[in-house]
Image 1 (cartoon, rainbow, N blue to C red):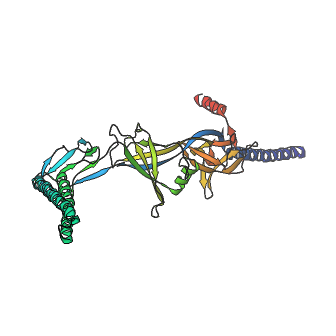
Image 2: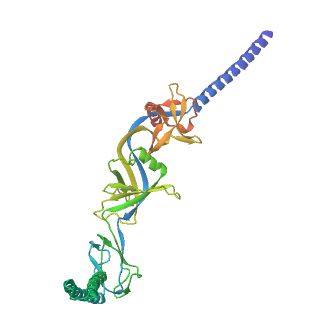
Image 3: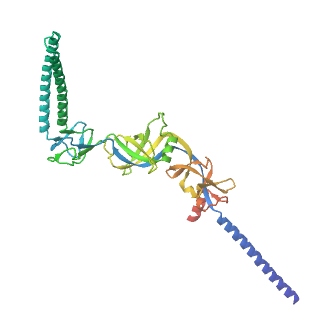
Length: 390
């Protein structure tokens, strides 16, 4: 009986020990699996260098090189219009005619007055020459000679006054024909024929030049400094190759002519903190219309080289943008980056990474600094895909 009791107690003890051991083993396996599950699985890629051209992008506006209001400079009825609205006109082409009769009469009178003044001046000159000869022989008094000299001077002055009056009359007569001061396109008619016009009437129409044409835009002081640093904009006294400018039209297409940067302002605006720049473009097909908005890209012909990293691999905190690199022990290390600019879907990095560094390209969200990671490769994905198909 005692022997049976001993056997039963032994069995009970063995069962208790077995259950305790299996519990400890299960807990060990659970902790091991949780540790494996908590270690993030990531993919890494190598940092590479890429060539690029420094550039800036900014909104721009198309501006006519010349925009001229056609105004009346003499009073009169608008007698004639010699163009159709929207026509392309040439410099010197007559566009308006103001009733010229009164100015033609004034011009003819001025011509007659000049002829009369010249005739009187000729007679006064001859009288003076005779008086000079006679006074030398003491046939006339000195006062008579002085009168002849004075009359000659008055006659010469009258000729000059008549010439001035004639020039003024001719000028007014010419103003009755309003011509285009530039090659360009004339806009909508603002005053119709038959109206009385003068210098207070305002613009009768407007002519804008179309080829070449300007595009103006602004950049902030930081962008302008980067252009100087990259030698896009030459320093004072330096001569460099022209700065190339590319346009993107409102429909998204690239304009087929590159422009040349030819002006930047002499100061930065105190209100906006930007500086105005201007580029000149050929516009033979009149695709660029004054007043239209476009996208401007200014770039240098100089090629730079720097490391790049996808934007998806970069995170940001209060200290700035950073990426994780993986060291030889598969530990993630945080590296803060100095970023120059955006290039497509990448960042161009000037400091923080070097060529050949292994950065975490996928799974970066779950990574913690100075913690180990599990680095996957393409074979891991292939095995997962194979198992999923099975």
